[in-house]
Amino acid sequence: MTESGATAKRAAGERLSPKIARLIRELILSGEAPGGTKLRTEHLADRFGVSATPVREALMGLHGEGLVSFQPGRGFAVVPITRQDLLDLFGTQAYLTGELTARAVERLDSQQLENMWKVQDELVRAVEAGNPEADRIEFEFHQLINHVADAPKLRWMLRSTMSYTPFQTWHDVPGWMTAAPEDHLPLLRALTHRNPHGARAAMVAHIMNVAEMLADLLTERGVLTQVATKRD
Image (cartoon, rainbow, N blue to C red):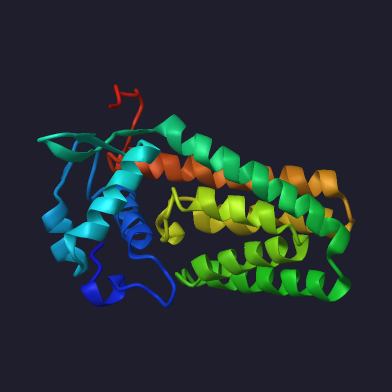
């Protein structure tokens, strides 16, 4: 999972070090940089086509998150991630998305609900065709709910937690292509019947279901460990 210098350049108004931090998280979650891997500033700077300064800033930020370790004279290294670490992050996401979904129930109009069913149909067609576009469609489905909820602080917190798990290729996760559209059905029914409690529960169940699938895949790839190690 490489990224050229051109795509690593900052967008207008965007600080570069947070983007570099996201790219390093992707290296870790992809399995390219498993626990214990040394992260050399100059190598990462060459890879992303940037100077060493934003890379070091990104690494120090990741050190603060506990994702990498730092020892003077020895530099940075990836801290092993446990399965529980990952599930804790998704548990937070599940809570936030559950609350957003419950609030969306009160604000969702008939046209918006119809659009959600249309996106669901589009997702089913993509899944049946084995189309990787299913990832984008799934994201659109959730964005519709989050937008309707009209809770900017909750959305901000959700984006913050999602930045720690920047997994992009959900169609590669065994079972996801079937589970995602199936999980949506009780959620859509609850939204249709204006049931906030049912909608919240369905969303939480959906997020944790796919989180377990992702944890299985990342464990198989050697990205996740079962036992925590001592952190610096």
